[in-house]
Image (cartoon, rainbow, N blue to C red; front, side, top):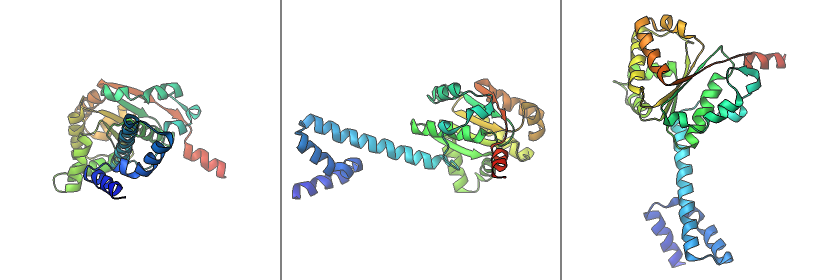
Amino acid sequence: MKAYEQTLNFLKTLNLKGIATSLDEMINEAEIKKTSYISFLNTIFTTEISYRVKRRVERHMVGAHFPVIKRIDDFEFGLVKGLGQSEAVNLLDCRWIDNRENLLFFGPPGIGKTHLAIGFGVAAVEKGYKVCFERITNLVKLLKTAEIQKTSEYRIRRIMKSNLVIIDEIGYTPIEKREANLFFSLISEMYEKLSIVITSNKSFDAWAEMMGDSIMTTALLDRLLHHARIFNLDGESYRIKNQRKEV
């Protein structure tokens, strides 16, 4: 018993929480199967690695700030035009993130743009990428307060250290000129350093009016479109469809 307690202390000192959590189970299984020393070592190291990967994914999922967890498998592709299921599945390998490519989803409200954005974001987190999700309204607030609020500064720094940034609902609310300038500066900083996913209910032609500056908007779109896959989605609103079902 003393040796067992000493082992637990060693594991605690070395911060091997995964091994400590499953130690009893692994010892019992090794005794029953008469496992060799090297196999037992491989088992405990594999257990620790799996534990750390799981914990890292959990931390990154929390840090992403997803409003809800959505998965691509749950998306109803048959109801939306502009993105096929096979094409979406191919994007789940996340090579587009390695290549610093952007995904831009355009279309009317309620057809699942945010679902797709979150679904690809969740898949990226599970593959080990750092992801940040922000609606444009909150992102603008962060940018405006980054110099005076530590929490905003920290979030912006995390965004800039991410592999993928999802910016949701561009076009649903007006953007002031100063806000547009801050947003442009952020996109310029991200350009070719990380991947961006955009969802918007406004076409490119309407962005200049939304941003209030046609020259800046052109420069902004030039950066977003340089390495981008564009999906123009269309279909019936899920919310309207569900309301009809309830009626």
